[in-house]
Image 1 (tube, rainbow, N blue to C red):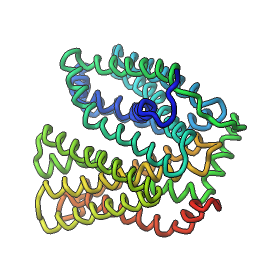
Image 2 (cartoon, helix red, strand yellow):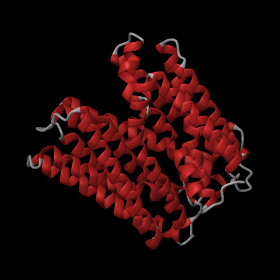
Image 3 (tube, helix red, strand yellow):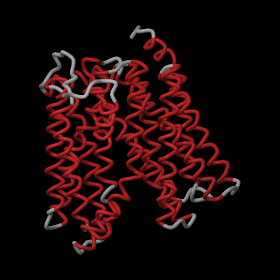
Length: 406
């Protein structure tokens, strides 16, 4: 019996599929030092297992969506999950670090499909405000991953060694294969989506020229870049500048993740009553406020690390409100090509996040400010106020989209 729309079981399944990529990384991070030492490698060489995963994850999202528009969500989901499970097993039994790095790429190729396709399934089943609410619920589940996965990974590594974390990932992949095969309905609407590379390029070209897609995708990029910026530099600032221990840094990260979850709940409720644009507005205002308050606190040397963490939490709460609703706005106008829209949106958010993360990290390296925490504050503030500007400039496009004019 398949899961029906509007059920918690279906939402949980889609949420876990969305979180599969971050879960595969967050769960093995606690055992990264032991893994590196076990292969007799340097920390920089060990980090390649993370970098390789990110490259594979970002570069292959673009293919799953268009293929799912043509051949169906379910078959492409199963294909991605099979690749993920095989890649995870190869990671678990890798005899050398180069083999592990290659296996991590394969694992990432498999994990990149579910995050794209779970969003497409949500768009197939729901529309308007309800789609924003569903994506927010999925984001709530995804927000739990940074809080739960590192602890689970640490316990598995303690009991079974670092290879056990990859066996657990493979086991999760097998469970999801069974659940998708037996319980997930095929949701793709009737479509004559192209299957050739040239045809896919034409679909992407049409999306890039669409003003609604551009406005909402830009808002997605601003929100997602904030998450990646924090991941990129927060450990250097909170531990290197303010002296937090790894345990306290993990607690601070978990606190911000909890704020993100609260933001998804608030955004879902606001969007349910007033529409997805209201959820986005609430979120980007909180993002800008968090960035501005961090600048003030750092410049005035007020509150120390507590002020930085509190301002980050405000930013993350805004992120949780705006990101799922902006994703819903991106996917709404394209029922026949939701997979392609989800793929292209995913690539845009990954590329923009990487560029912003590199820029903020460069500001940290070049030490252009009097205080080493200022690059994070400037990055948050720039993203928040840029999102407000995009929201305001795109008002005519958003209004026309709500009215069904475009």
